[in-house]
Each structure stands twice: as C-alpha cells, then as structure tokens.
Amino acid sequence: MPLPSTKTYTTEDIYALPEGERAELIDGVIYDMAPPKRIHQKLISELSYILNSHIKSHNGLCEVYPAPFAVFLSKDNRNYVEPDISVICDKRKLSDRGCEGTPDFIIEIVSPSSQRMDYQIKLFKYRTAGVKEYWIVNPSTQTTTVYGFEDDKISGQYSFEETIKAGFFKDLEIQMANLL
Image 1 (tube, rainbow, N blue to C red):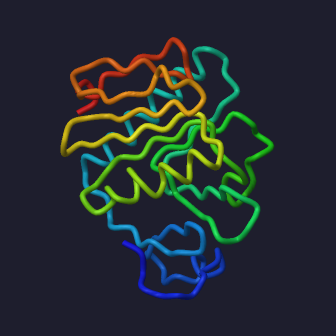
Image 2: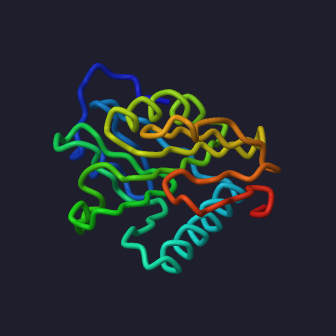
C-alpha cells in the first residue's frame, strides 16, 4: 500500500527510514513492505539455489541476488525496488549499492498484502524498464504467472504441479510443488 501523500519521494527518503523498516519507491511513491512469511522465504531460498546452481553448472556469467537487494531501475532517484530474486547478467550494472539498472530476470513471491504491487504496479514498471522475464509466484493460489517480455511464447500461468520451462535459461525447468 502506498503511503498517503502528494509529495514526490526520492531514494534519500528510503535511506532515511527507521532501522528495520522496509519500503520500495516507484515513480516517487513509497510503498511499505510487510514482513515476509515462512513460505515466502523458503521459496526465495529454494529458487535462488536452483538458479545459482544452474548458472554455475553452465559456466554462466549471471548472478542471483535474493532480497533484500537494492535495484535502481532508472538513473533518476525516484525508483528503488527490492525484488524477491534478481538475476543480473551484465556485471557493469552491479555496484556497492546494488543493481544500477534493470535485472534480466525477476521473481516476486506474492503475499496477500503485495498482490496489487506485484501483479500491476511492478508488472508495468518491470516491463517498461526492460526486464526480459518476470515470474510472479503465488503460494495462496498455488500458481506461477510467467511474463516473457522478449518472447511472449513463454508467457502463461502454471499450477505448482506443472513444470515451468524458463525462457531466460533455455534448459531450466522448475516445478514449484517440489520446493515446498
């Protein structure tokens, strides 16, 4: 949920938040973040491990960063997000602050309080920022929605029982039910 205000916020406001408070900034609007549940964290851990293992076993150059990890989608100071999982293949985008630009592949794990954010606001922002592939994993509905922004053929919705073929990593298949 956005914090009510007509003020345009910047990354300075994000860094000024009290210790332990997390929020994201999209187009100058601050969205607070609720603490994640156990299943949320388990899925992040499992998916990060699978992606990392796949990249390493194929001598890939991409790097996987689970949240909290700062992503600055644009050069302005009005956008700061912490995707649940970010895959970055261009190491020039990595700095001590986080990712300075758009990750190649993003996964968000939906919580009840983040549905509008993940399915609408971030979907639009990630697509327009140049993310190549975006997955929304929803433990409540046991579905994963895949958006292939560069290859629409991979887009679709999958149950946790179905095998998802990643578009970004051509030979990677994941079945969410195996991760729970």
